[in-house]
Length: 380
Length: 239
Figure 1 (tube, rainbow over the protein chains, first blue to last red):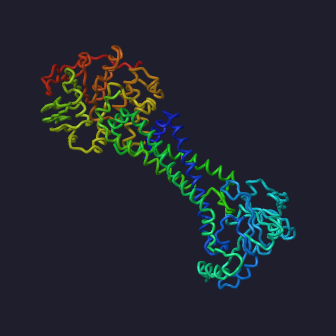
Figure 2 (spheres, each protein chain N blue to C red; figure 1 turned 45 degrees about the vertical axis):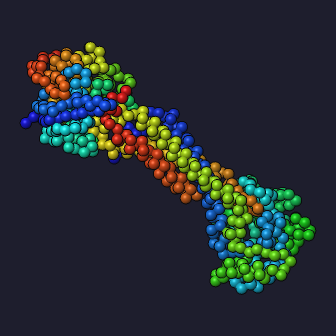
Figure 3 (cartoon, each protein chain N blue to C red; figure 1 turned 120 degrees about the horizontal axis):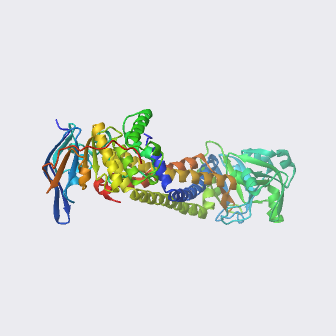
């Protein structure tokens, strides 16, 4: 089966500049495709997890930016009375940038006692007791810490807020690892003295039998008579709506990813066509010697697939390295999507490159097998 | 029974509005061990007949049987298998694969046959010895002279021990001296290894080594010019 492998390898090496350019072009396209895919994956992780479906976010009605939503913290007591609600976590959100950004800083002020109950955080550095004792203490997500090179004991300053890093945590949720948690009152007062008692949003925990959408309606109904009307949605739906502009952009990026697939296909197909056209006579000689048309086809497909696969390996490797090293997150309105390399990204990148390689070589390979041998042998 | 039996063979081409018939109702028998020279003016169908015998072209009518196999009724795939096992083809322009060494070029047809690597090595080394290029085995075609390239082409054609070898103007691209060496080589292969060889040539000197010369005219083979074997010198293996 592999007896002609040396011929295939030497054929690719014969025009090494052309082969290398094709591989590098394919690698850049596969890299872009993987990078875009990782944004899509990050969005899916954020809006499809269990928390995203089973928790509710109460936000001020007709408000989208965290800086404009101001709910009385006291709403938590009223929400707790609604059937199916087990707990309410008041959150004051602070962000350095409400617009879309690749380096967004999001601080969540929450009651210290409720943080451990409501979030599955594992401290990899520091102590919970330090966080609990110091009012200006913060625990920082691992992703954010890596990106900003934050260390335990550092003093971080964001706007008018200066916090002491009491711990660095990891979480099963990649979006959590991009957050900074502080004491609720500390974040409220950092905004202004008048902000005490006000929160950006309330996160509602439900029991297992509660229907999230039904409870959401009941909460909005119950708070209708309050000072500030609310809109309550599932956490995933809230996040998607909050960053709807970004979701639209990610949708457009998906088409960009598809364009990259088309680019690889066209690039490798062009190289393969050129390679076959250069060797019309040689391929005819091989067939005259007794190489079956099917084997000629497989050899050409092997050439195009190898070119594309090497491009895929390089592109996936590049995406993996940059995503691992960069710890990027793209966010807006205080909601961040983390970009992480994943096994699915590697497998899809390599799989797509293999499929594209085969497709790119198919037409030139088929043409090579249909060549009239006598005419091809006369070419010089 | 003849090795090659050609019956009522006709081949037509369409060139614009004109229909050309280079081979018309041709009957020809070739015995095992013969060295046949096909001669004739340009366009008389010599190469067409050779390509039909080699199974790389299909006739419009008629049949060709080689060693009992009706090659004109084989599919493309089966025909390729038949060529791999039974046919050696010597090209005018050598047609070696430029990225492969002389050794690898000669080994190429053997890769298509069920054969161990040690058997392949033994056969390639023997073929290299026959054509006198043992010391050039690892050279690439660009590192060989025209004569040496043609020797590699001859070695590639005989390495599978084919039933039949066809040669299309095997000395057409060579100077007089090198042409003489190749003539000698072909004659020795025919005599010493008993290889049946059909070659197309314009050159009367080259044709003189043949045991039978056939002249093609108007698509038909006319009476043989000569059937006498010529005396040839001992095979030279120098470069």
